[in-house]
Length: 444
Image (cartoon, rainbow, N blue to C red; front, side):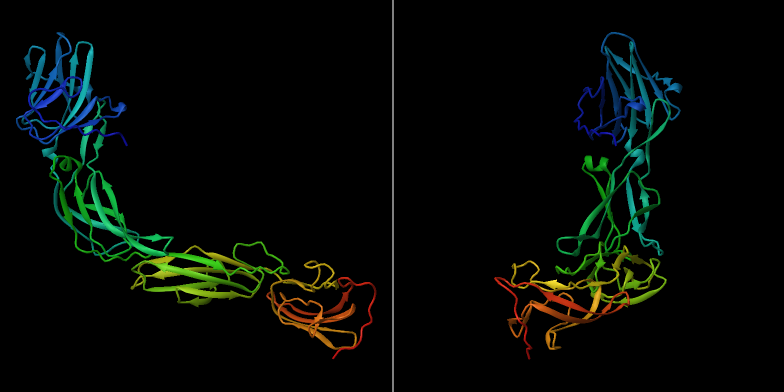
């Protein structure tokens, strides 16, 4: 977007604006806009009106000055202006009754190119701002009655260009705030270069009024217009979703590299925050990414679900408005539960070195049911474990058992459907400060 310079002049006499150009007889300021270099123009001037206005030029020398004017055909079809008044090195042209026009001033070997706009021929008018009965979910359409036509100027090559009126459409919508986890109302604005019959804007997420304000020329002249619609009832729906997994820090549980899921059981909280028009909402869980086989539906905005089965579960949040005409689908969360594994060590050394191999624990992943019994050589149970994360510290009745061989029996179920029935030896091989072997005796 080219830079725009707004020049305010209190016009009394022929004061210089640019390259000798000035205007007299206009009670409103002249708005000067820099033209892109590719247009060949030095400047574009927007005047409130041409009534009683003279365009003035002060020559830089005593050389012959010739004025030309051109229309949409470009400078190649320029015609000499014969109604120029001259007073010494000052030249002037009465613009009353003329329309938008391009001018070329030839001063010796120099040429200056301008486009002059009579704003009164494009006067902004607001009559009404209404809504068609049928509305899209993502785009709101407004019907505009009035005049906010395109203001066009032409380059020296006859190429049509638009002057931005900067008409502002403003309305309220909702924006999600990460810090508060809520949707909050904000004012949003859209700049319009001009308006035909219809205006399209991103659909608001709340009921709101639409206001048109403009344009930048009337604003500069202290006479901007404004019109406000009736309240628009929104159909648009949106939601912000999140999935947070409960983390376990268990030293003997094998890790599974995945974003969500891992070693079963996996507990995940799903949370959704919805915009105003949402009436129906649910979390859907499926065995396929296309959600053709939905196995679970949960209507709560916040739900905690425990995944116990091997494989990938696809989860998404769906929301819609009261008549189901507008839907929202969240991104799909993929929860992967890895295959199971269960391994048992055959030796440990309680008290031998604190924190190092001083507890007997299985190594596992995705075990959802676990039962372990440990016996001495006489078949007396010395320990019982009900969770694979648990370990045996080598004690029975709060006393360390003697070194020797013990036996475990494990029954477990896994997320992938496997049933584990394991048994084997546990060798207690050393005690802290032990000086020799010990004799094991039956314990009750």
